[in-house]
Amino acid sequence: MDLILLRHGQAEDFDSGGDFSRVLLERGREQSRGAARLLMASGQLPEIVLTSPLVRARQTAEEFCETAGLPSALIQDWLACGMVPAKAMAELAAFQNFKRIAIVGHEPDFSMMVEWLLGVKGGIVDFKKGALACIRILPSARYGKLRYLVPPKLADEI
Image (cartoon, rainbow, N blue to C red; front, side):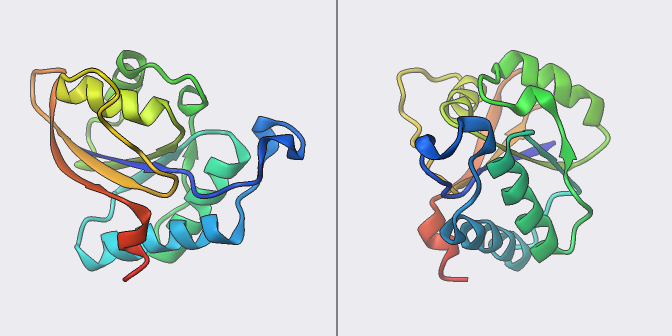
């Protein structure tokens, strides 16, 4: 299975009414659309999109799915801030029939997930808002192989 991670796009500041209700800025919406265009152009669209319940992640998923012509994302509580990699992999087992899954979520969760799947430590992954990564989950192992990590500025060019 290929696991695509899409970090939510640029959102309002923390002082705008609480972390759970922060909405995407127009820049965040464009980052979401750019990610969809990039995956469309490369033939790498997911079969299913799962999203954190937080507003900015849901809006990222909505923009992404609409641009890509995909069904609406499924809200998953385990993708909220504070996701633990081992728990995420256990939850993803329910979707094992899909060859390519996208999840939309947060930092530092996604950096930790990528490092955990690659078997590395030390904060070496820098996962910007609107960035995409893809990890090929290896069969019968908890590890994966990095296929790509794309900063949002590259998707702007598509």
